[in-house]
Structure formats: C-alpha cells, structure tokens
Image (tube, rainbow, N blue to C red; front, side, top):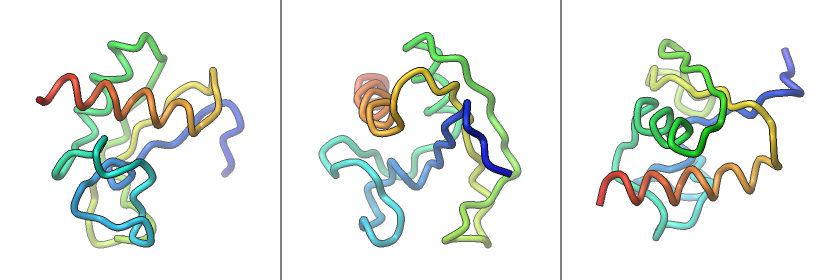
Length: 94
C-alpha cells in the first residue's frame, strides 16, 4: 500500500555501518552507528513533525532484522525530511 501523505523512514537510512547500495540514504558524516526507531522518533518530535512508530517492521533489504520504521507526515520532500532528521539525530547523540 503506497502512502502518499506519509514518508517511511527506516533506521537503515541513517546507519553508518551500511553502504549506499545496502540502503543508507544520508552522507556518512550525518550517520550514527545502529540508529533505532526511538532515535528517529525523538528527532521527529523535536522537529515538530507528526509521526508514528511501527516497531515490528523489517526493512525489505534486510528482512531478517525487524528494526521497525517511522512514518512521518509528508510536509516537505523526503530528501529534505531525511536531512533534517539526520541533523537532529547527530545533535541528540553527540
């Protein structure tokens, strides 16, 4: 089911240990080691982005790891939301 009004954010998008081809979506300098959906949810909360956490979901490229996902209301483009969340995660966990 395609969600046109929400952006799906997987922890793998922000994982320093992954390569771009493995699913990382932001630059390494903005990534963290093993980010969690709670970190992403906290960053979204601090940015006042409406969001929902789904904890039992598995990233399609790594179906054996149930990392969960965060659904963020699409207020901006996905790339811009990814950048803002990554910056906020970096501030939270320095």
